[in-house]
Amino acid sequence: MPMSHCLDEGSGSVSKRARSETSLVLDFSEDDKKGTIQPHDDALVVTLRIGGYDVRRVMIDEGSAAEVMYPDLYKGLNLRPQDLTAYSSPLVSFEGRSVILMGMIRLLVQTGSDVVEVDFIVVDAFSLYTAILGRPWLHTLGVVSFTLHQKVKYPSGGQVLEILGNQTMARQCLVTAIQHRPKADMSTTTENDL
Image (cartoon, rainbow, N blue to C red; front, side, top):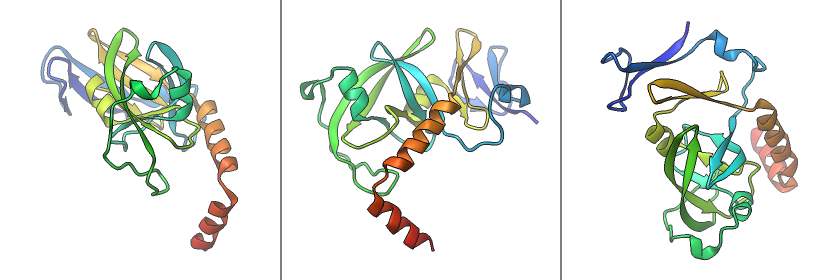
């Protein structure tokens, strides 16, 4: 059974039924799984154009209320501390730790011919991902993402466009993150899990 959402391009609202003739159906079917390794529990990792550069290892995370940029991308874009604006709200990592915030920067994120301004919170923390795009970007672009199908779909110019995930890249990030994890963290986690 296909998963679908109807999106009225004029209003940006999502509903179960088409509201007008201009509504586009953003659906996912078994055909969308072609080319993916199934079954899996891989993160949705894509390549996007950020700040004028093609950036790999961008994780799409519907659970994130913020867009996050990690040091590799910050340095790769040749950004400097004076390019950042102050950002003081707390941010907590996946492990539940507070993250050191360097500041915030607004950059253009391009998907196809669509360009969206995104406020990235720049953090000083290790990550194999270069950035995380969360709900603000997803909602602005009208994106529907589906990790099972390893795709992002969004309306643009009267049609539905797709961004494909890269499972190989997602798996490489996971393996490297596990190998990078400090031994003290691994022993504590193991003891707590028993």
